[in-house]
Image (cartoon, chains in turn purple, yellow):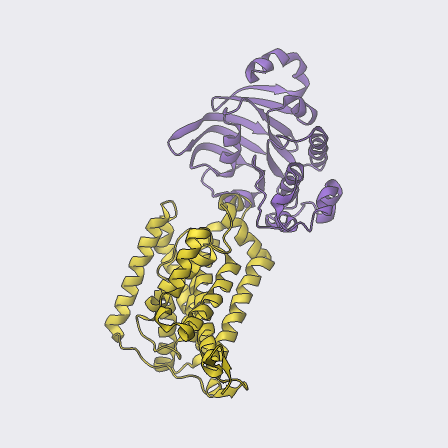
Length: 231
Length: 295
């Protein structure tokens, strides 16, 4: 589904990614683990074309996207839920939900989204998206990309700073969308949460992928992982 | 004769109407500036020149092609809007990554070039544009006579301003526009062709200016300086209303027109400066403007 090879990325003069290599198979949930500043978020943004400059190869469904603009990449069927959530304060909750254009058939209907996220239905009339709580904003940020029909979802730290009960709800959501055949690339700091949803984990350090651990082998590799993440 | 505050009523209402008319132009021009600033982060100094172009295109349509006022009200904004789209595509879009100041300097230069070209071709004395026959004459409102054309200007300007506001605040296109004003890269990452949206926004803001220009043609003579006369006041209106605020620019535009008109009645010496006095007071007390949001 997604094959990344030799991906380099820059913000202005600073060289952040130094040849990232990994792949995600269709229907998989794959995480990028790593310390702060390792380059996980930059990898997500680079896949979407949201960095100043990127080189290397990012193939989606076999087609090279490295020369494409962010809107073209989105139209190809990749959607992002950014780390800072990106809820628009000048838009109502409903407008936020309906903002991303539908890029392909097969997305969730608004009713299905409200079944997954009952809170959003209650808050649909809220005039400013940023009035929602952090957890509600995170759900809205995930919900709006489920509508679009994009089959490859990039979720950047969806559990960051949220209460355990909301983290559980987001975990259930990720498993639910995996069951519906979505492919998910997840950035996580919290590998205990990651272990409950993912098939495989890539470890990122200094802008490179340094290891891959299948979820089944996570327990056996705990010491190594603690070492990587410095926890 | 009826007197209000020691002023003859017809004089008071006459100036009120004149104030509303000026206010209608301030509102339409500052609305376009606000939309353009929101999306492009550029202070469009060429706005006055493009307003003037709207009036000239209407004049040219009438004198060269025998196309009258009402078709011109649609055609001139379209033609000048396309000109704006070409300007944005070829020149202005190169400056987005630079400081605001560069956009201001560029559009200021463009306005000098455009006005210079028109002055060269048509002189600066101005050419008359007749009021269309259905809008000639005046209506007795009981307390004053209102020239029909002036009523039409206030009414149509109000309708256009409200329609623009409704498109921005109530439609999905408007929601996309507001979102792109907040965070353009993310909106583009959702699949929206943001560069095209920016181009069309500039074109629409310019079309609003040109529409105002056509409305102005029968009131002020069609001359190359007509934009410059307006634009200084309009920038004061934008500062008072709050940079980038849609509703703020409409309300402030009309209100300041009226303030200016009333000053002409009560203290005529100050009428040319009152808007700037208000601007100074607002800048000192509410630097973000009346309707501006805290950053």
